[in-house]
Image (cartoon, rainbow, N blue to C red; front, side, top):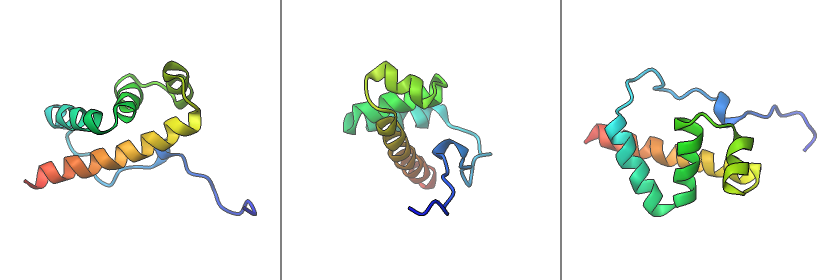
Length: 90
């Protein structure tokens, strides 16, 4: 609250394993599973990751606030990372 902390955007964070090959079939399966749990989060992932839309563009397209997109994007990314990591270990 005193302004001494730097704000980090989710988009600026690098994933630990960012350089690994992306399995598109596994990603599609994970997105389908996410859509069953939270359709809005899945749609946000599609717009942000697959279509390259900004937070503002995504918010306008689906009629929610930018803060909602930012929050859902972070939760969806974390869920997908866990899901894809568990599939790799199987």
